[in-house]
Length: 64
Image 1 (cartoon, rainbow, N blue to C red):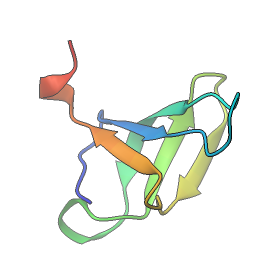
Image 2 (tube, one colour):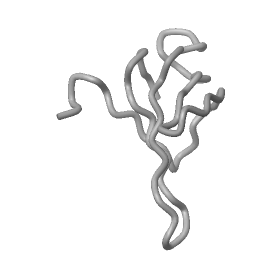
Image 3 (cartoon, one colour):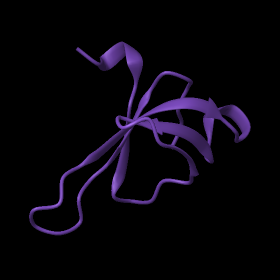
Image 4 (cartoon, one colour):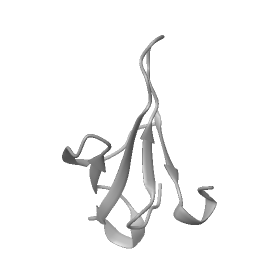
């Protein structure tokens, strides 16, 4: 998994009825775009995370 500042981290819901969580990557803390990432969620909450297999990166240039 590789990301740059400004990309989106999407954590998919793991159970029926649970919505995806979308966060903007505000800092890449790993080497060459690897986790961990400092992210800001839509409600303004910030966290440091190392995404699991239920997550995806949406790169800025592919977001429409």
